[in-house]
Image (cartoon, rainbow, N blue to C red; front, top):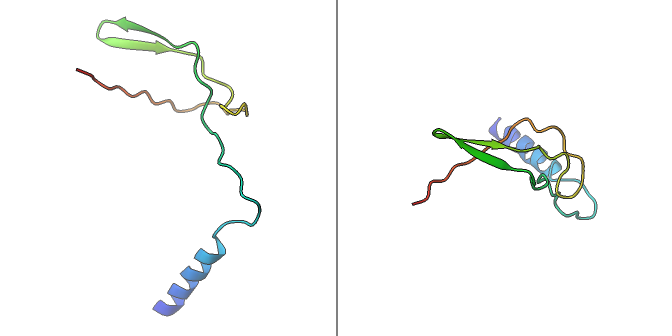
Length: 76
């Protein structure tokens, strides 16, 4: 039974290696650079504001952004 399962897994892995065709460069999936970023300090908070880009860096259409991540790094 173990041999049958191993053979089945190996067959599926080899069959799913990719599709034939000429190599293509990876997509540039980054959004365009934000040009209207503003920030303000309100008490102990920093409030950021900007307009979400509608295109990617390669000028292709960017679907509506649903998640944005802001990272903070403290420096001495």
